[in-house]
Each structure stands twice: as C-alpha cells, then as structure tokens.
Image (cartoon, rainbow, N blue to C red; front, side, top):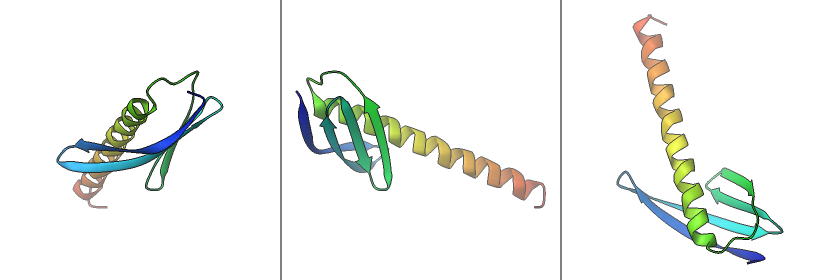
Length: 81
C-alpha cells in the first residue's frame, strides 16, 4: 500500500484510546492527542494493525512515565522536599 490514512482505537487498562494514522512514501505517522510517533517503514500491508501496535507502545510508554513521576514525587515527599 503506497498511501493510507485512517483512525484506530485501542482498549487497554479499562480505557479506550484513539489515534489517527497516515502512511505516505514510506513514512508512517500515528497521532494520539498531542503525541505523535513517526516511523520509517517499507510497504505496509495492514496499516490499521501497525497503527494499533504503535498506539499500544505509546500508551505503555506514557503509563511508565506517569509511574516514574509518581515514584519521584513520593521520594521527594519522603525526604521532606
């Protein structure tokens, strides 16, 4: 597939996430809210599947960042800062 665009949803952790994707000239872009991920790829046979996989990684990374912020805040509070 040379050009493709659309939208995907993902259900994870009891929440629903939505993203749009666009594939053109070997560049695949997934955007969810204010976050975007750009990936250079060859031909894409199943763009919705690839977009959902990228969205899943974005959600997982965002969750890990939130967890790190909570841990850091807890440490600062424990130290009396």
